[in-house]
Length: 212
Image (cartoon, rainbow, N blue to C red; front, side):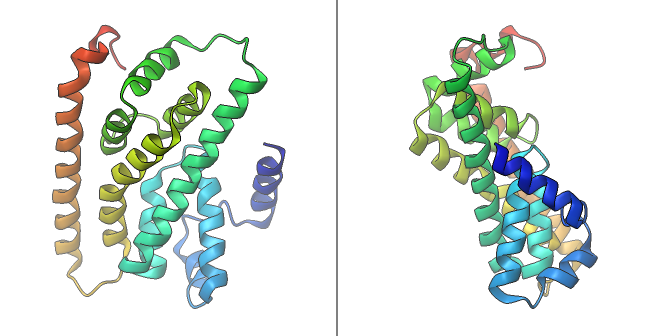
């Protein structure tokens, strides 16, 4: 945690953190810089996403900076690494504060993801609503099995990563067509998430608490 806070402080002072959303920063620091540019982007994006900021923005900027093919790979690398980082925060917190009572909302989420880790994780990643940070922290705190959790996360991240990388990329497709294709893929991923939610909500009593 101390290392992460130091890294964040450095990023804020250097201006990198605040300019990740800026295409000018991508043009100056990332494009044409080879491996150095790729690693700089991934490193900043990991911190960016691990504190709950939108992974869709990471995918969009990866597409803008590296094109579709490379952008998808780098965005997924950054997003899943951010997932692992915040998972580790939750795990470490459960070790250091094992006597603390978990908030009620996290208790309900914990029961939901622990009973069927892969499917529940995949479903939450596909849905556009909800907090990825809360999901990662809770999964770490209750120490779910890592392989089902990270494999479900990675698979669930793919659709929206493809969509926003495509929209942000400079592929030779009309912008209107790219956005239309992105909207269609987005709706398909959401429908799949809703289908999984409807299938499992009675089993996990998800309707018991409004606004979950």
